[in-house]
Length: 280
Ligand SMILES: [Zn+2]
Ligand SMILES: [Zn+2]
Image 1 (cartoon, rainbow, N blue to C red):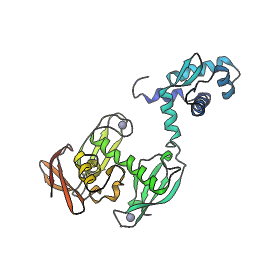
Image 2: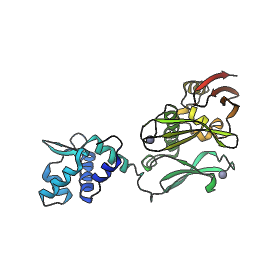
Image 3: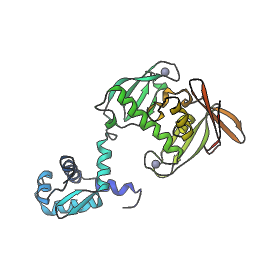
Image 4: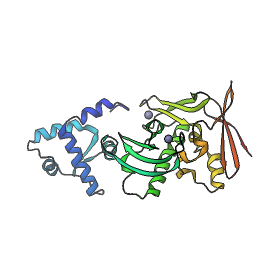
């Protein structure tokens, strides 16, 4: 399989029988993770196929999504990745969840916030559609947790997006992200990155982009704040529009990270590299 060739994967799973085979192997994996192999006859029974030739044909078509051994068949690492994506619920756009109260306030109207999963997106919303922010969190993260746990888990995943983007890693496909600080609206700037591999656009407030920076993490930790699990939208300096354009040629953007009256100022160039830090 060529790296990044989605067509081939879609062809492999474009038949009901092949999906049923993968499903049977996935359920064997769940039931007995230490021994996930299914014998040929058992697999045939679970999928409900009588004709060996027919089953052999589909097993062949599944290619490297499955492994063949003396004990029978099991999912390969690639097959498990595919099943993992489907199991996370991201493909089910009918699924809804919430609303659940969220900390912080709307950056437009200061109204209270709620989380609601709808149309395949977790929305952080005050109730006004134009004010809502989409968070890239799969349904699998939302089930079976208390509200506090949930907010921490969502924050952890979202905040990691900033760190990954700053390191040039696409949060969707782990491909290379290239970008710059770009004018967003009026005099506001955000970091806008693009992944050539999957086509994802990564547009982040400059503060969120800096959230994983070691100086920012250390400064916050000294003030008793663990940034890894603090929702970025509750931090003033992670909001769009709180950055300062110090100069436009060359472009210099400053973010003031504040905790308890102490400030750590970081200045970035167009490429998003930190060129100066100052504590006051
Ligand atoms: Zn609002
Ligand atoms: Zn990507």
